[in-house]
Length: 212
Length: 212
Length: 212
Image 1 (cartoon, rainbow over the protein chains, first blue to last red):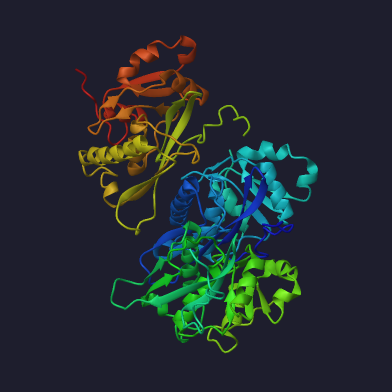
Image 2: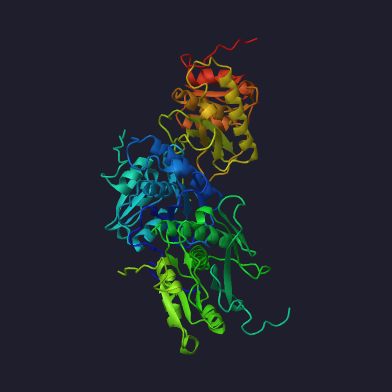
């Protein structure tokens, strides 16, 4: 139904807390893929998460993994920090626009956790950051496909910092310089690497990651 | 089976609170698509929403998004305003006539929220307003298809103000003047734009939207 | 989508408590197959287990068997030992990366129990141990397929001790010496044999197994 405008997949100039730009790809190319999470008003049932956006089975499991990981991540923080108890009470809703487009795959794992932590802490991520990466339940960041298409989509959307899995480093190195010019790449092994790059050193759960 | 009467898709002369005219389209043309929401009698189970009308998966998810968004929207209002606590207790039922016609797609998102807010506040929308637009969980209004067919259907139903997504502005500009004559178009970026146009400046949740 | 790097299926250098390397095989060869289990933060519903990783029906049943067996195993330990009451309260999540790869079969049974016991006791398994074996509900270890491919995968991942079912002993003997050189094989009849080899004689639930 008609042509998408250049850059039309950037919905947010400055995403509010709870909204994070991920990156997806299909055979037709890459695209921005936002993860939006809000807290529903309190007083409705117990804590929990609801998910919408025509997600396939793998992506639905990614939301489960992200939700479990986020709660475990927060339980390891100093409990006096704001937001660490958030999911003990909050009933949240995660949505992945656009609502009519079927989506699947595990590569939004790190984006989902970032969206949940952004909501819990009430803190927006740094401007012009996008990310991609599969997450394991303990926070390892696994490599994903479509790096080239995703970087092109990020560039088109005006992104300056792209967080990608460490094991995709070679894929980024192979991109020709014109695509990467002026962009900053962060290679994440652990989710904490993603957190640090997305929120910066002043963020409440920032922690140096020792590298071997 | 038989010929539709001209204008037969206008069910309501003046829709009561909880009822809002949306716009749908198929390959056969556009049509009015009402969203009706009522409060079921109290004392039956907890708060919640039931949906009927042969909705497909995408449209069912739209109702979830609309319900979550509406509750979050109300929680941000001054709590002394009438209706802001409505969904803490109300068990509501949303229906999309005609009940035998399968319907799908995300473009009734803004209409659903408007229906829910109309019910919560007990306030009808302004006369002869119809709307279309996909909603994200944070209230962004995303573009939809079939603008031409929807505007023709709105005109046929005697609608004077059509609320469409901001990113569909070009589609409206391309329509020939005969279709648009005497009609007023509102281009919405945020749901608040939709609310303002649907209920007017005297409505309880009316708020100026700063434009950049 | 591109070539896997040599040894890329080793996600963990030193797996934390709750993470155990199993071994899988397909027609294309063997691979490391991690079982990850974490405790979700407390205060969310009752105790229970959630499972993700695109598991087929047989493997899902394996998680049920592993969970039941683990709880029964712990109930037979001295109750003063750390971790024996863990599953009375804990809500846990078990995941099998990579999230997009469908997996099935019963041969991760012993790995799942080991992951659960590792989490409950807060104790990592010994370094460079991997395992495979179907488990019965009473703790018998049944033989599995693909021993050759699994041993090759274990070797490639730097594993030194491989725990295999007792009834697969012949399959190991038939492997040529070059594959097995420098590797240590443990043949398990009962789950306790697996536990002893995975955690060592200082582990809390270590127990000599009388052999007939």
